[in-house]
Every structure is written in C-alpha cells, then in structure tokens.
Amino acid sequence: MTFRKPFKAVPIKLGEYQLAKERRARRRSLFVAVGLLAGAGVVGGLVGAGLVGLPSIGVPTLDDRVSGCTATDGDTIRCGNERIRLVGIDAPELPGHCREGRKCMPGDPFAATNSLRAAIANGVHIERITRDRYGRIIAAVSNNNGDLSCMQLRKGHAVYVSRWDNDDGVARTCPDQVRAS
Image (cartoon, rainbow, N blue to C red):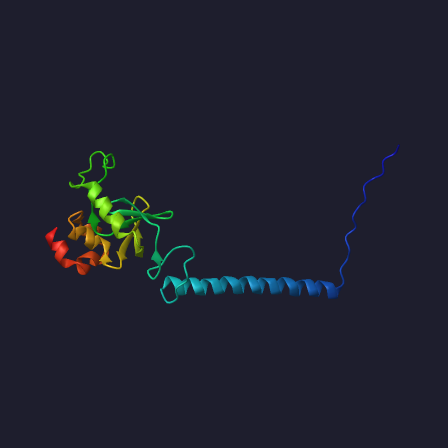
C-alpha cells in the first residue's frame, strides 16, 4: 500500500472586484464597531452624570413595594439575596453577634427584632444609599406608617448614630427621636 502526499493548497488570486468588496466590508464593520463604542460612551456619560436613568433589572427601586423580607436583628433585614441595614441607627445585637472588642448597644435584642419583623410584615419601600464595609446595603426603609429607623428610635429599640446617618436623612425625618436618643 502506498501513501499519497496530502493535497497542497494553492492560494487563489482574487480579482480587483473581489478585493475592493472585501475592503468595503472591513471598513463597514470598523465603522459599526466605532459607532457602537461611541454610542455606549455617550449613554454611559449621561447615566454617570445622572441625566438619564436606566431601569434596574431585578433590583427593587424606591417606587417598588418589596415583600417577603425577614428581620435579621433590630436594624437589619434581608430581602431575597440583599442584606439591608437601616440607616442612622444601632440596635442591640442578638446573643453571639457582638464581635469581641466592640461595645454593643445594651437592650433587648429580641424585642428590637420582633418590632422590626412586625413593621416589615406587609412590605416595605427601600431607598438604597450606599454599601457598608460588610457588603450590606445601607438604606432608608419605610412602610405605610413611615420610616423604620424612626420607628425603632421612637420605640426605644435603637439609638441614633450620627456618623451612620448619610446626609442627615434620619435627623431630618424624625428630629424629635434623634434628640431623645
């Protein structure tokens, strides 16, 4: 049995018409790519400047009523995969949750948690502000009766912490409870 040499490919010489057609196609794809990048840059600049808002996908906005949340403790709730910390307050920690070396707020952590659990039972509105160093979302959370940070302060289940109050939102919303705590 004899083996034959593999087929040797011979380059095909393209005519002027075919070469011009390929150049035009490359030029068109380059213009499309540059156009898409420029358009994305313009939209990104407008969104970054706050002139245009993009709809969030899967993340509730202020206008959304979020239900199914659970209270983790007196100042933190969990809605789906999000851990949300109420802005401007500190509530007593549940047993075993106070880190060593930290001065945790005294009080009844179970009463604070139950109070927050009752407040979120019928759904809440969430206005996200920022994230803390633990990855939780810091937010102003309210129900039909008002701001939940203010409610926890009013019931004596939390204390106001001014350095945690972004833009003094809690101090403006419920100044009487802030002064009392």
